[in-house]
Structure formats: structure tokens, C-alpha cells
Length: 216
Image (cartoon, rainbow, N blue to C red; front, side, top):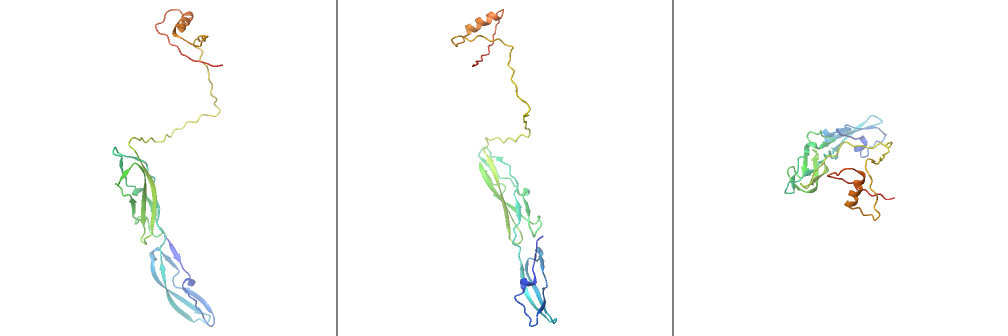
């Protein structure tokens, strides 16, 4: 937990002695979070002859450090058919700490409150907490609400990277017949049937042709 220290010079307003001062001390020099508030300390001044003089001073111990708060990561949600979504309760995922208090007494609030109705789009969700000294810490996170027509697809975990050493090769298929290129550039069914009849015997009931054109 936090602490603070003072020295005699912190409360001495200018002690003097006609023969010289041997020492100036203050009764309390260290304060902790348990000491937050007003305290009375004693300043003791001793001269070179051993004479002692004392006075009291008031020290106020303050805690001015706000709590540290970390917002959780918010997953996107999908609106219902009416275009609305209910804001979940994310308070359990908030991490809050303070210099003067353990995490358990810190009460975290969420705004908008859990159960609030949200529309499609981005909403800033704010998380706040305060310590016993009134210092406030806050953090924000963005929650995205998608329209009901949007499907949230998880990111695939499998990635395939081709090897640089592998060079793709193309092997042309040779188990087919190539028809001659007509002079007029027009291919009709009669030409194909006539050509097919010259290279194949018989009369097939079904003939499939694959058309490809090459430029040289």
C-alpha cells in the first residue's frame, strides 16, 4: 500500500538559537494509507548546550491517487430482428486496483447499465470505480452491435503458405483431338460432325466438344 514521508524541515518554520542548534527532529516521519487524515506532530529543537524547545504542528495526510482500472475486451454482438440488443454485464471482467485499498472493497459500475437496450452501431461502455478518498478511476471500451443480417464468422486458425522452392508447372493435356482452324474463323456443328466422322468410326449417340482458342 502507499506511504508518505516528511522531514523536520517540512514543519520547521525557522527555528533559531543564540548559541547554535544541535538538532531538529520531528516525532513522526512516515505515514501510510491508514493515516489518511489530520495528525499532530511534535517538533523538537536542541541547541549546542543541550537546551530543548518543542512545538506542535499539524500534518494532513492525503490520498490523491485515483484507482487504476482496466476495461475488458468486448466481443461484438448481434441485434435482434427489431434492430436492438441487450447490453451484457461486463463488470466481472474489469480489473481495478488502488494504492490504498485492496481490490475487494472497490465497487465497479458500468455505464450504460447492464440490461440497457442498444441499437446497431458502436457504443462506448464506461467502467468507473472510486476509493475511500473519493478518487475516481475510469476506463472505456467499444462494443459493436451488428445488424441481424450479419453473420459473425470466427477467424480461421489454419493458414497454408506455399513454399518458395516449389515452382508451378503446367502440363498440357494431349489425350484429345484437335480440329483444324476454319479459314473463315467460324465453327459450326456440321463442320465438327464432318471432321469427327473422318477420325472416328461408328455413329455415337452423344458427342462432347471442348472449344479453346489460342493466339500465336
